[in-house]
Amino acid sequence: MGIKFYKLVTFRGIVASYTLIALFCFECRTAAMADNIEVLASAPLLLRERRKSISLMLFRFIGIVLLAVATFYPFVGNFSSWTGAVKNEVCDLSVGKWIPKPEGPLYTNETCDYMASYTNCLKNGRPDGGFLHWKWQPNGCDLPPFDPLKFLNAMRNKSFALIGDSVFRNHARSLLCLLSVVAKADEIYHDRTNSGIFYYSEYNFTIYDIWSPFLVSYKLERNLPDLELYLDVLDSQWTKYYDKYDYILMSGSHWFYRRAVIYENNKIIGCHYCPDLELKNIDTDVPYRKALELTFKFITASEHKPFVVLRTWSPNHFEDGEFPGSRICNKTEPFKEGKINGDPADLLMRSVEIEEFEKAAAIGEKNGLRIELLDTYHLSLLRPDGHPGAYRNYHPFDGGKKNVENDCIHWCVPGPIDTWSELLMKIVIP
Image 1: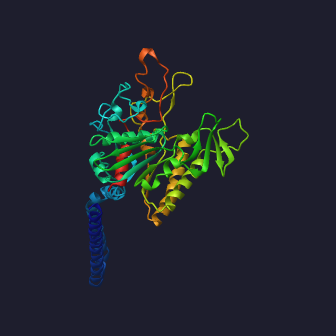
Image 2: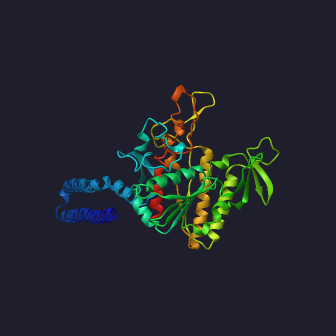
Image 3: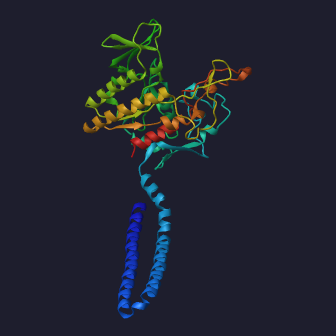
């Protein structure tokens, strides 16, 4: 409507402009003709009459200009709003702002029993509840609240795999709690890695919560001095049942920051953060890029074509505490836009994700495979108040304790992480 109105105004403006110019030119021509007649009739009066003619033309010209300004001023004032309306037609879910929300979450710690103890901030005694009353408002589009009934109906007779680390498990439990408003799932499988399978019998819908922090194969055992990471072998934890998944949500994790000996073709090619070993140092973005490349190569080459979503990096909000060596996160409100830029290491990992996603999405489009991006990094970066902090433990300050461990990586449930499912739903369900 805004575009059509703008075109109509522009057309009318052009017509008005040509009309005003024509009137002015007509006046000029009339004056010139009058001058010629006067020259033939009475030459002595020529100078005086020309002065009158010029003055009359000048006053008429000023009147025309003022009329034009009065005609166009209201439209010029609204031009920025029209162009803004045109720009706002493009919806970017990752760009927006957090706005106050009077109503609370769909669930609480008392109505949902899927959440892990270290993310159950309310039960653990967190005194402030303001972090529950914010809504993410994207620029250019609306983000409806999560609709558990709509989600379950859309997922009827399907399966959804969430593949990643403990932050992914954090998200999976948030999703289970959101859905519990309508239906509760039965956990039909659980293993030592804490991977789980949840089944909604009424909808024949299965959620796979799969522990795979690197997406590629790794070894972390007590008898090994260091974590071993194999960049040319995918983690079978998620690939062995790949053909069962109708939807996949995946990401890398902060585990890539850990000290690790790195292998390719069963040979050590270097190490990350191993100053005591005589090995080539490999920066964290290199193994992450290779892990994503191998993952997307497998996905785009497979005959099975699920709906694949890559979630971007999850930021942490550690700050120095009052005690030596202590790290805390005790904010109670979101950051204002521009108040935080993000950790350079996190930004580098996110840039790797964007680059690899764009390459894979282009290949997938040719192969009939849909790959989308769930970009939660920036909106999560603005929520330092969303972490458990000291309340990863039950009533951490009881007994007069002051210097307690803080969790500034995982997210309170309920909390800002529920927004990730709102974004996810917007992407996968039309």
